[in-house]
Length: 167
Image (cartoon, rainbow, N blue to C red; front, side, top):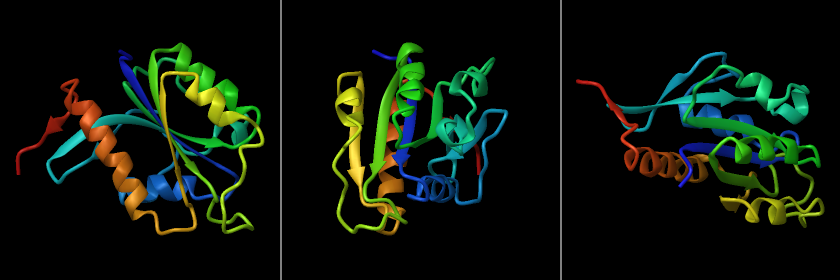
């Protein structure tokens, strides 16, 4: 059993990756340099590290972003390019279970139907310890974001990582 969790949102440029995090946090969020609280209910939260702005787009290797960070849960935007395998390898090699949501088609993709996985990323992911889902980035994000929140809640609950505040 993996000790850490990656929630990855994979897609073309302008597919809705950042919008996913905005809806999840109910606010505009950027890549941080610290662990932050992600509220899953009004009184329960988990600690996460967010990489909004994929390593493939920014050119900053994910290992550099996470250098010295002890995050059990990482949220990471991932660009659908052949270089994404470097990001995936980092997490796989560092004891992360991979939960990947592929936005296909993406919000700004020209077609209204999904693209064929012409880079073979799905086969690459499925050969690892992962769960992969494909969601339409042209649809409103609420349902797919709730799926992510539910997954995080279940995973974190089973590992006693849920923090509670008193109201």
